[in-house]
Image (tube, rainbow, N blue to C red):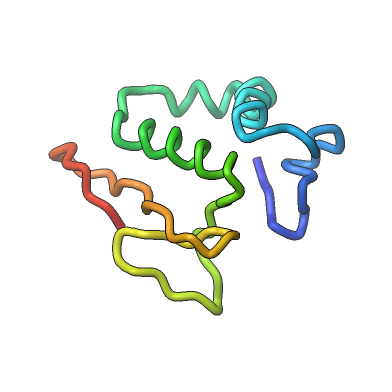
Length: 101
């Protein structure tokens, strides 16, 4: 499952997903990449909550930016296409603490 910002709104090569919202894209991702999703199943509440947050923020026009050469982010945050800082994903830990990047 590969995507680059150079693909624009042709997510994962899908020519017919240009108007899909984040929830529709997530559903489609699960359908198209069923085996990948199955291999990732398990209890991970902090990450599940973060993905729900990111889907909500994306729907409001704040698409996440994990890396950009021209940007610096405060600890615990990532960038967005709108310039609004977003919460960073939780860092997996053996003690299941909700640590942030």
